[in-house]
Image (cartoon, rainbow, N blue to C red; front, side, top):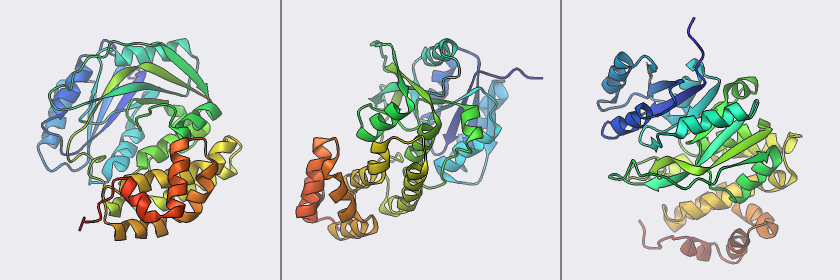
Length: 325
């Protein structure tokens, strides 16, 4: 019988043949060895499927799964269904982790009985400085469930979703937490589901995760067709929080409006003004922005008032281009 690894790393793989080698190398560089790596080939159109098979052939801690394309959420769900670690660590196939990253996570797990979730700080990198060092270590901080919910809502802590998150697998299984198989914000939905049940969350205040910023990545190429499909899922998430005794009062009041104004802010840079107005109608922006006028963030309050005065002004201030076609 195989020994259960402490950590399972679940990694969706799609269209990253030039970057996957560095990502895997960062795992081979780990000072901590008690982990398994689940590579989920999401019908990648390049040489990634063969690369994954080769890694499985060479390294006994690697398992490869090939599936029809389901997107990042579906690929992560596949990995979750077969992984065996006590904790599950989520990593993208173009990112890098520091050599001591898993050792740091393991140390936190060892010192804190049944900690539900851990995440580290991160730093942005680009091609050429993927292995950028991170030397500043400000230790750890522990948050209660409601404190972490409020911090996540108010953007008081820089949180990469779900990269750098290490979650107790039993918590995911017991509460049937999975990724929604949509193409935008499925990672944010997942973290909100985790935070509904995680009694204690530990933040490692060291950038152990190097997040790759590149043209064509999912975050930089989100289309409106992907974005507008996310709203019903956040409505249902909001309903779950409203009905839950585990939710903070601030989150119950502002979870959905805060997400809406954030998406409108981002979407303005991607769409025409006509498309922006269509999104505003779909998202019931007028209602949500009115509610945010008492939110605990000056910028959000200002934007909510601006939208009430003029959606066009909101669009322009948020980077919209009236000449976009």
